[in-house]
Structure formats: structure tokens, C-alpha cells
Length: 191
Image (cartoon, rainbow, N blue to C red; front, side, top):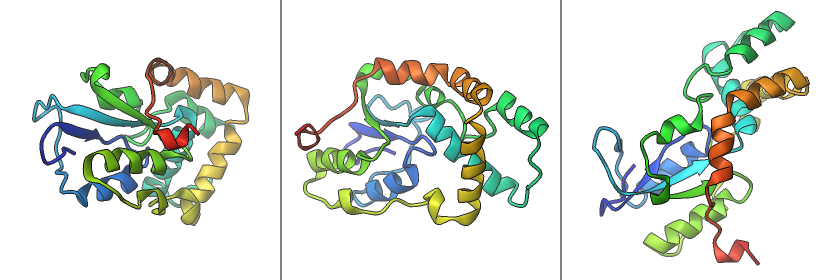
């Protein structure tokens, strides 16, 4: 999405509070865009999330969308899932969504318990006071019984060191990115 003046863009990465973020940007007339197609050279807001946490949420989303009634969990099925890791954009590497961006022209926000406050602070810089820090998240797994169940299944599965290791290895590039960038922290969060 791009800010009305064209100098700022938001890069959508699924499972990184994107269903919550996009409608809030629409409140200020941000427009859907694609920095690849439109060759945008604006400063980018990029939300990153812990890769394992994101994957668990993403794989639950994938199964809820495409295999709702699946309930045959064997070690062979888990082996298959953890060998493949990526099934759709919800489980894709985060670095692929920012491919080609100059990370020195990005403001990175961590998708964690303080994301709403950080987002609210960024929006305040551009658009003034707001209450986004109080808005409830959307499409939260715990609010949907099917997603919640799939999330529990995969959270339990990654307690197996072999599977957790496979996930962490697959997302090595995401961990490198997360460890190499500086994350935005508004002053009120640093008190």
C-alpha cells in the first residue's frame, strides 16, 4: 500500500498483522499498490514476526483454508509437512516479500505484543493522534476454533526438536534479516 503523497509505502507480509494493518491505513486513504509493478522507490514500513511463531500461525491458516476436515495425523504426515515447510504465502519466507528493497530505506516494526502501540506511533507521525493502540486484532487464530485447533497441533509438533530444527533451518534467512535490522521503538515504549 502507498501513502497518498507517494513517499511512504507499507509492504504486506501475510500473518504479520496484515489483516489488521491494511484497513487502518485505508482510514487515511492509503492505496493498494505493488512496489514491483509500480517501481515505487518510497520509504517502506515493513512488519516482521518471529519466523517460528509466524509459521505456526501460517500453517494453521493454510490447513483451515484448504484442508478444514483433515484429521489424520501420523508421523509420516508430520514428516511431510516439516520437510516442505512452505505451503503458501502464509508460510513463505518473509525476506521474499521485501526482495529488491533497500533495507536502509525501511522502517521495521516487530509483530509482537507491542505492535499496535508501535503502529499507532508511526501513524501519529504522519496523520496525527489515533486510537490504533486500542483496536482489537483481526483474524486471530484463538477466535476461530478450526484455526485454533490446527495451531495447537503444530505448536505441539514443534516440541519435537527435529521438527523445530527443520523450521528454524528453513527460515534462516528471516532470522538473519531480523538480527541485522534495527526495529522502530517509539519513545513511550522505551520508558
